[in-house]
Length: 97
Image (tube, rainbow, N blue to C red; front, side, top):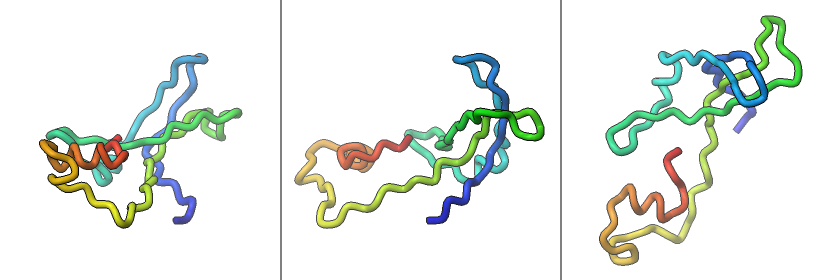
């Protein structure tokens, strides 16, 4: 995959432990996923060493990382008793966020 970032917003670093940013909800919702009845969007937050031309030194982009699918292993009820599909995903090591 190319290194094309999907920009969702930007902001400013207020101090060493406080970042302030705005996120475009319209763009974010296009990439939302549902987990346990709630909607989530995974984001990357980057702090620049120097502010850009608009004075912003924080960038919020969509986290597009997708781990490679494991081959030869598929959790089943037999190998993971008393689990749901969501639990099988967690057992597989890929938390939804």
